[in-house]
Length: 397
Ligand code: ADP
Ligand code: MG
Image (tube, rainbow, N blue to C red; front, side):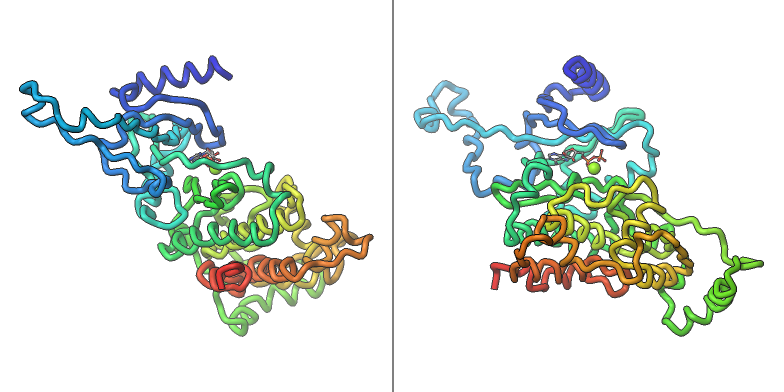
């Protein structure tokens, strides 16, 4: 509320010398688990190099010529007779990172953002300040709408444009060998009017290979089978492994409920950038099915059940085994072979009882969706290849 905002403002202004001269806080725009984000006017933006400018084409303002000695000695400078051009206000997003975040986490986020500067569709970092345990990151403000307000109205070509922008960002991030780890609508700011989007929030991002131990999913199928033989034979006898020599599994599970890839749920210890592709697929499934949130699990086991319901027991068991996990279930709603995306989308959009069919555009979108939501990460499409897929090239060729 307003009194909170006033308090926050006083705190920021006390912590950072000169803050009041640099920024005028306007409102609070986001409040998450890790930060509070404010919209502010940048009062001195032309004093530093602000090379990224979303309004570049629109903003015709140029600074007036410097006063020369002639004007100081009283001669009227020629530009004063020209009509005054008003400078368009420049807005920034000020992300105040909670002091409960570890210093290494905060540094990680700022470092990755710095590495990604200049990447298409990734919101760049302008600067950052620290005062004792307080850190604020300054980003260009990006106008965007709430996902819930536009996703139901999107046509298939709209979806293609939205996802092209998201996959452009992912291709840049992944080419830097960085996993975003938290792809979801609130971290992809999109303006349906200009049809532009930027990826934000690298708070959970990490470099590929960091915190990583070998997983059998990276072995070739023959080697994997050999390694898993004791596990499979004991399971066939309906018993647990007597002497389970497998080390306890501890894997990075960072991310958001409902967007976690199957290999994250199966505690794969060698996760790759493909986890972001799965999450982007969940966004497309949400839009196509007009349901948000599409997955609504309370924990990882429920999340596995939801995914298994779609893909069926057989494919889910194979996906588990890829990472050395056995999956057994007697849940009656998990059938042997699951459902098709076509069926799910017809059903969720109320067309399964009517004779409405999927359009050719929808079929193409679903074909792309199935490439993003491949259970096996090594067969899932990469961001780079996704940009070449006919669905993301819709309207371009
Ligand atoms: P958190 O780690 O707390 O989730 P985010 O970086 O995702 O922080 O920002 C939270 C919210 O603040 C976003 O969902 C968005 O609404 C808003 N926001 C963040 N960055 C910007 C920006 N550059 N321009 C406009 N709004 C932003
Ligand atoms: Mg966020």
